[in-house]
Length: 115
Length: 113
Image (spheres, each protein chain N blue to C red):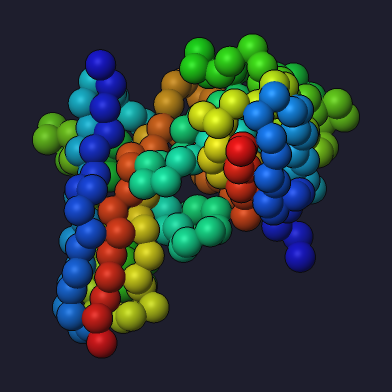
């Protein structure tokens, strides 16, 4: 399968713990996006990378969230000191900049539950 | 403030009929608009893109219109099938050429046999 993959698919954690999610984009894609989605809502933009550079971060993103894409390939999203409000589906998407208005290909998501 | 609105009520239609979903936006001037399909527990899947200078786009049983004066896009599925049952999301380009997408909340379509 050459699509976007995410790991883990599900994560249950206790409030206050740190969690890290991984995203492997489509190999030739240079842009990578993180979104968060809660029940009944559309995905909400969190941050994006072009190659290894993090070019934009949502103002809604708490400083407990950090993302990296060290070699311009896979990316990690870390949430420190998790809160119950962080419970959501975390989606990763990738695209090839400069093509067809950046059609984004989404992974299956990581569902986070904070108890 | 900027808003993208889709009908939050589920749309229930009979198999074979045409489903029409609406996406309205305010305080945006998007260069393009995209429609995605999302099944429960899965990531969105790209369906169609329409640019600001295009009035209509078709792909198989799907048709999208884009009216920049009304600030509205309509998404049609003709000859609907139960397999078309899903949530459909519209998305606008968020800023410049970043590719960042701003999504509506989605409309759930249920096609009954």
